[in-house]
Length: 112
Length: 110
Figure 1: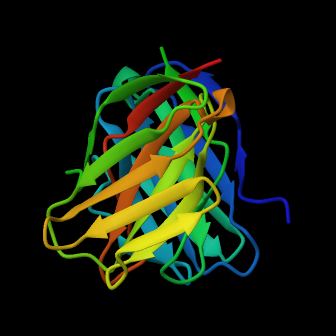
Figure 2: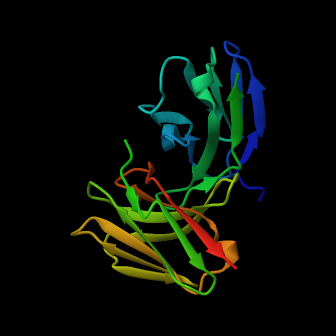
Figure 3: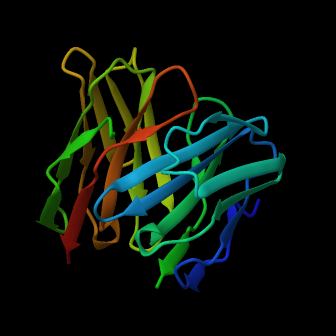
């Protein structure tokens, strides 16, 4: 298995632009998580899906952030418009059941 | 808000020494997990301990859980330079959702 796949690995954009991050979970996993990691705030859960349905989006910082999971093998996290304070590493993780989560390599986002 | 607080924030030791990291949390849990993160990488699961367990071993790792004190510790024995990383505890209650601690940065000098 290739593990959790994220793309792009690095994204540099200018303030105001739309950013779309992509994630392919491990086949057969039924829960998918989006996290954001910064030095100041640590690792924060943004949103998670179970069986493609958003369960908890309380961590989504504001309306500029949206996430979708159209099918079991794909999810997107979109930021529109992006701001410099959105600069962070964004991780996607997947799991089956209440045990370990498998993390992707992350997308390092820089908003200028 | 983060559930777990880890102590110490940073730890430097020599190869061969043991490293102990502690995690405290605030609410009742279903299980507690420890993850490692190498610089610039995603997190990797190390070990899971359930709320009805008190101690668990995996290779050079030993985890303890004290639910009465709402705390856990991770011991890495005979540390190696390759153990240099950040270590996070994470707790879950009755859903898939994990709440991560603040992490401990471990530096192992050869």
